[in-house]
Length: 377
Ligand code: FAD
Ligand code: UDP
Image 1 (cartoon, rainbow, N blue to C red):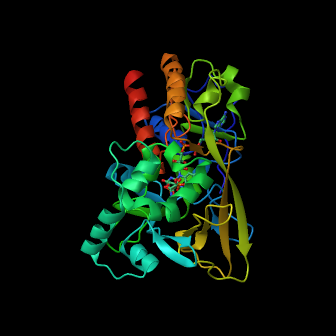
Image 2 (cartoon, helix red, strand yellow):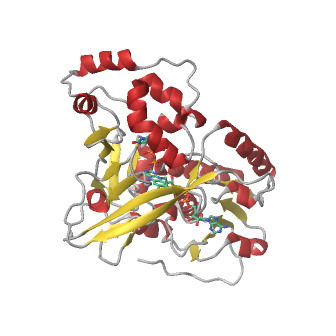
Image 3 (cartoon, rainbow, N blue to C red):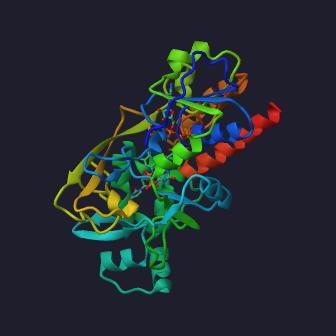
């Protein structure tokens, strides 16, 4: 499942150097190569796909080494673009949260409220119930405002405050509204984690999709190659940088905060199914936030099962930008430097310091490639 590497001696034979072989870098590479550009993609990891990389573990189960990646989008354009490189498996993600002894649907819906409180409310009654417990906030600035405004203090404590503290090392009140706003509240029985119109997994996995995307005569891929080691060699090639923006500028304004994770992967050889749904969240118990069982996502048959626990931590690979005003202000200073750079485009979750999902990165990369082609036409 690895790409043949086409080696070259210098960077000068390329029009574009792309740092990072994740969604941002790979989509840009393909768009530019399709337009006739000669593109070099490097990644310091030993594989393509960035954080969406998947691989078969030693027990023969397709897993996501960097945590569960479920594709969902409302963008027909993004879905159709990726469909050039993969078939899809229909999959709607479902998540349960362990609260006390109960496993309850999250996002909070009618079932959650009824099971948690031993009620049998209909949809109108759930709306009335939430109206009775919510604490209206105006303006809504923080994630605490979002949660209290929609579900009130008890549900906030049971489902959100502890999870958020673990995940970010911060209180809900210290995070921008957009973080908790990712999770809707429902008065019906819809127990899907996402409500997007396209919800699918790449049928043969993400890495296979990336292989097809990068398989183009105009694209050369070199993994295990850090930009810092080749920076001086790339001559006049335009640069597309998808790594952390503060690292690009040698942290000259100080490090941008990121949240990291430790992934604890386990294979259970004699367990056919570990848990009832793809992910179980643990808002109040354990040091990990959630357990994901990959079989649910991939539909693969296997006599055993592989799961991953996610332990949030401050140190380690940067996985999440941390959305809060002071971080946004620091990012803006780096962004101003980026705007002064000639011949460099910054694209991607770490380069743009945005809590973007995969589909948003694809959209950003399509736009960036198009802009570059127009400027350099
Ligand atoms: P990345 O995938 O991070 O790729 C950047 C690449 O650049 C990396 O491979 C890195 O090695 C490389 N790089 C950085 N610096 C250098 C350097 N100096 N030299 C060479 N290479 C370098 N999104 C969803 O839509 N659905 C999900 O279910 C979902 N789940 C997620 C779960 C977790 C735990 C995490 C962390 C993210 C999740 N995401 C999900 C978000 C998704 O991972 C990102 O939106 C997407 O992968 C970002 O793509 P990217 O190309 O911007 O960055
Ligand atoms: N969240 C929570 N409890 C949950 C699920 C989510 O408090 O059971 C909050 C938490 O702050 C989390 C954010 O909502 O970081 C976004 O959740 P999501 O599942 O979208 O996070 P991701 O999959 O990106 O880690």
